Length: 272
Image 1 (cartoon, one colour):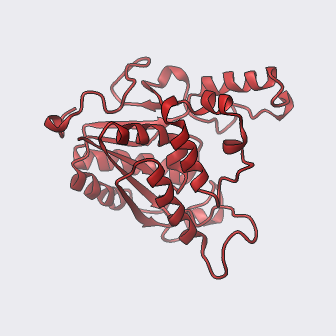
Image 2: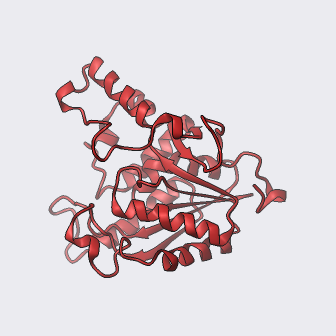
């Protein structure tokens, strides 16, 4: 049994970006650990959703544990920072936010968990945090430093395949699911993900989509039944989320890996 640690910014990020590889690793007998930087205090929630006196951070912690169960996670840890909000918001600079945290201090917290777990594999985000959220960018910075401190052999940067996203949007127009004028611009000032040419790992997680969708459903305060994630037909959901994409520094060019845990066994702990 090897150990996979997945590091994320907020509750619900884990199921969207890495839910498939988490469930896959768990089903194959590996240990899966989820580390979340914040409790997602600044997420939007429908009026009347929370109970009297209930704080959103409390609900999101509960949701994270429910999603973790669906994904086969053995341990959940929160680093204890506050949600920084979207880029450019006043909350970015408030004391205690993840965005204002010392990279060295936060990395030491994560490195301690990596060391306790003797983690062979760690997932973080790409250098733009997939879409430019300050906490996501900080996950990249802290994750890179923490894995360096801990000597983690395999580090994968979770991302979105920008070219596949563009193809999927075009298909949505052709099939009449969305009007062309309603399409987001994949090449906007803050584009989503990375070009396909920069991606080095593509993991087919089609078999684990029921667990991935169940984990999304567990985050009910953020992902409603009528949301984009849960309302789309199964076939479209498979096209959108059936592959999870990663960049492993020093590998490539092109897709060279299809399994983050390939070759790892109880006799190979700590080895690449």
